[in-house]
Length: 272
Image 1 (cartoon, helix red, strand yellow):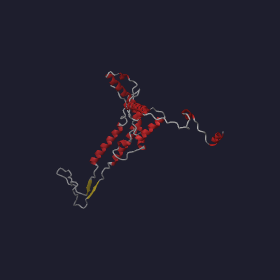
Image 2 (tube, one colour):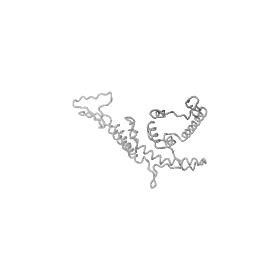
Image 3 (spheres, helix red, strand yellow):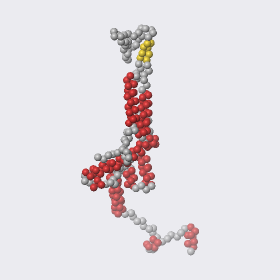
Image 4 (cartoon, helix red, strand yellow):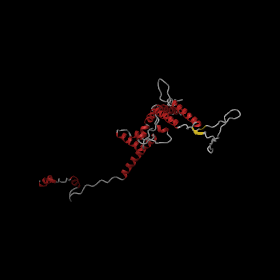
């Protein structure tokens, strides 16, 4: 069994990312439970009446004077009777508390707050890049630790198959770029890396192509170069003929003939 540890340490056991989130999640669960209880008993307006004689049954228990319903009308013959209602509980306070706890959870876990939203305004452009910076850094750190474990898993798989690649200790896990960027931004970044001397194969790998695709690209480039050479041999470029000289001049003399200079230097040459 190959352990995939979260942020392995030498002096202590790995700690789950949920360790710091569980207490906040417990608080959210408790708040939601309180909201459900409040919605059951205090979320609807309760009515009351004063100045009305209380009727009791044969056991001395008060009898409910009215059957309250949507289609019922409350009335009393006693002119001193007054009706009223209590305000319903405001469940919005629970919603505000839950949102505050979710914000704390997002801050501690480095998860963008808009990931927890079902609606509302979602950031875009530079704002979403800034919002996801913490999560991207966290993801790259996990890629470093988890990559070693997955390399060991693959070596064990090759060992089961009696494959010599079971001793490929220089193998490297290739992860997809976790950063959320547009295609134009990604290509612009790759072009700038090319300007500072990053090899082509590395640029193709950063662009998201697999090693098999990069190898096929190399074969395609070689095939294109070979086809261009064959076309050049089959259809050679014509060599331009030198301009014709005076009649009677040999071809060698025509090629070595030099045109007299123009301007003042030409006048001096003609005089001489």
